[in-house]
Image 1 (tube, rainbow, N blue to C red):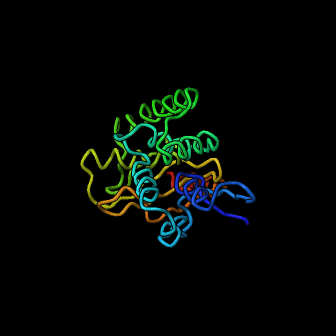
Image 2 (spheres, rainbow, N blue to C red; image 1 turned 120 degrees about the horizontal axis):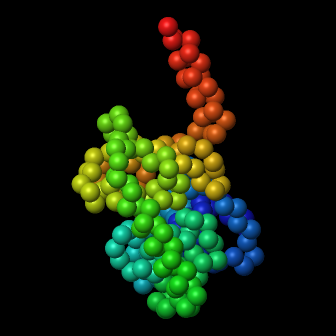
Image 3 (tube, rainbow, N blue to C red; image 1 turned 45 degrees about the vertical axis):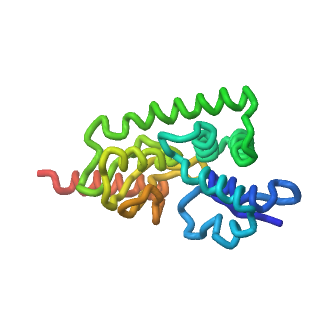
Length: 211
């Protein structure tokens, strides 16, 4: 059986619900650019109430600044593409157990890196025009915690966010985040060659209009 899943915590969780890696070929794609839900309710209905509760709790903490560090780190590792570590942290959380010392050390290190980067979300003017947040220096794996940080800082309405690319899909990503949520509803990607063409066009236009 072949599975096509997003390389994030939702994709890891979907693989776990399907029974893990054994006997399966998994194709990973960049997250959020597909409208397909990797964890539809029909898939979760087969879980026991306790397992479903722990899984939903885990997913709700992806990119969060507060909550059990083990669950937070599972999301960070998954978004980074650290598959073995993410899998270990996720399955440990779902089993209600403690991670190995090595996994715990690496997990906390990743969380420290993420938190340091997120501190810079609004260290300078990043919004132009109104309703468009420019995080071009942020790779896509940092966007979920960045959205949560913006919500904590009081941004309640909908907005667009522009970020850097993903290890599975380079380019400039444009995210649309509806009001009242930290989950994007639409993501589009401008490929690097398109970006270069756009820049060249703007430069040519500027030269042509110069006195």
